[in-house]
Image 1 (cartoon, rainbow, N blue to C red):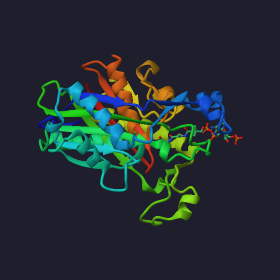
Image 2 (cartoon, rainbow, N blue to C red; image 1 turned 135 degrees about the horizontal axis):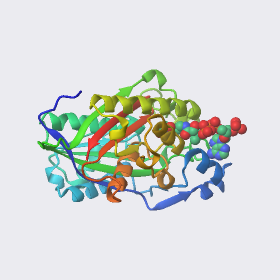
Image 3 (tube, rainbow, N blue to C red; image 1 turned 60 degrees about the vertical axis):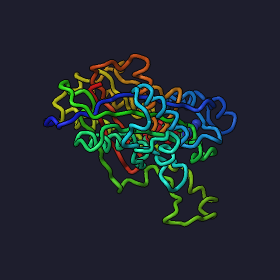
Image 4 (spheres, helix red, strand yellow; image 1 turned 90 degrees about the vertical axis):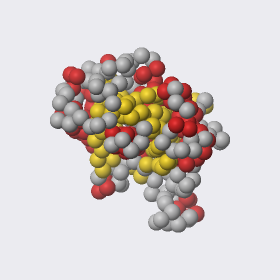
Amino acid sequence: MNSTPPFQAEIAGIGSYLPEKILTNFDLQDKIDTDDEWIRQRTGIEERRIASKEESSSVLAAHAARKALTSAGIEAGDVDLIIVATSTPDVLFPATACFVQQQLEASRAVAFDITAVCSGFVFALSVAEQYLKTGKYETALVIGSEVNSRIVNWQDRTTCILFGDGAGAMVLKRTQNPERRGVLSTHIHSDGSRSDLIRVPGGIGRTGVNSQAVENGEYFIHMSGNATYKIAVQKLEEVSREALTYNGFSTDDVDVVVPHQANRRIIDAAGERLNIASDKVFSNIYKYGNTSAASIPIALAEAYESGVIKKGNLVLLMVVGSGLTWGAGLIRW
Ligand code: UT7
């Protein structure tokens, strides 16, 4: 059981941004050997969003962040900390978070990125949680933003059907509220021995800027879908139980689950293993596909804005991604 920290990390605001361009399963079936029915049955995805040329991860992130700041009633100049979770940074460096800071004119904030791929938002939330709960910072902006369309091999039907672009952002405030509203706890894990499951093998450190690596498709996502699928369901259950036990809750106490939107079947299987009713498990994967680090904050924003998440609800986040990384978070909204 968790002892009460001096401060809480309350959710002050949330927002998301999705590029306008929609790519449907039917559009894909015109280009590669796949079909709408296969994609829908195996993944639950019907369409995904594709960023325009001008929209990099920082641009999507800044749009989502402005919405989150507006919903929190907070000025960008009051933000102390910006963390961007992304595996599609604008450039190798500086950090995408620095570009976001510049675009928002959040001049006071310290800004850095986190790479935990699909798990990135929960990892970033975990870092922000520590800074707020210890009293170091007062206002944090945690963002997940991805332009997966730039690292997808559009000829590889086993991966290109899955991914989409988008961004979601959350504003957290340090408070001392007796109801303990806010992030109750986060639980994050890594296992580098499973790094082969999902990866972009091309890099700077290993290969240098290498046209052969580009030709070999090493800058695209490579994934062992089936093996990832099996381990994903297991890790989601495991880490969700860890978060609940840590806080003295059972699965019955959960009001809404907001899982990483990787595959509808993975979400359903994890919900079943946790014995949580399917109507408590939020999914918008049919519209956006897998937006990696952006998927949880996009889903959270939509669940909150549509009234699915209400004040006082116990919300469980769960995620698994490349690394291997996995995590869960419990929020008293
Ligand atoms: O964000 C976290 C990381 N990612 C994930 O969590 C993804 C995890 N994995 C998955 O979601 C699923 O494994 C996939 C959706 C990627 C694949 O679904 P699956 O049910 O595991 O299919 P499979 O890989 O076992 O393939 C079944 C068949 C194969 O044909 P054969 O060998 O049985 O003849 C594939 O070639 O489906 C074929 N296939 C396709 N057919 C039509 C694979 N991709 C496609 C496609 N369209 N796009």
